[in-house]
Length: 239
Image 1 (cartoon, rainbow, N blue to C red):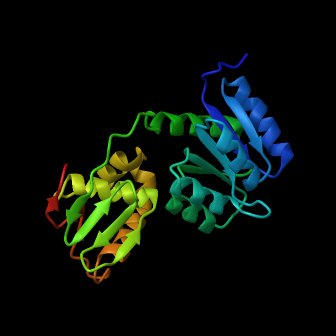
Image 2: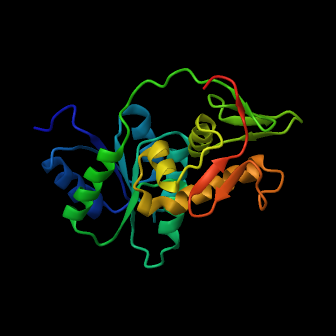
């Protein structure tokens, strides 16, 4: 009998001959599982159950896996392991840039999937209550982490994704400090730096488009060649 407090994995795949045997295999390894044949069904499961990891097929009819992955990341959903049969790397790269934790190419060995699932769950941060968040000012902007926004004194306002919100908060915690990509990955989501440098670079680029007067020549989030990134501004407000 499966432990009622074991991690619960949601398998989202339109192919029954993949999702059902995979669920059976994971249950034999001690996990609880839920199944969904498409994105809409997955959203229903996520609304009613505590899911610790989503195994998500990219190629599905209707809303595809990349769209659902984007939604999960934006809403602080559980970690995502993408499944793809695509020979082209484009979808896999896009998935990682969106915030997926790992990917596996079909056909795959169930033991390899199990190893990746366990690795992702080890990296997942513990579920703890978030402390009250404080609004902080920098370079004419005010960051409101609860509203996921930055607002400028001149009236401009930009919405942030959850990933951008976390990343900006890390920079504000350590102003004028060079933060390596590995450090940013560890602080933002516990990712393995070697695999996800590109994800950090893309998040920084998106932040720059929202807060820099000229994103191509940044003055707030500056690049330290060979080192990482630095918030080149003082921060006002509670640490």
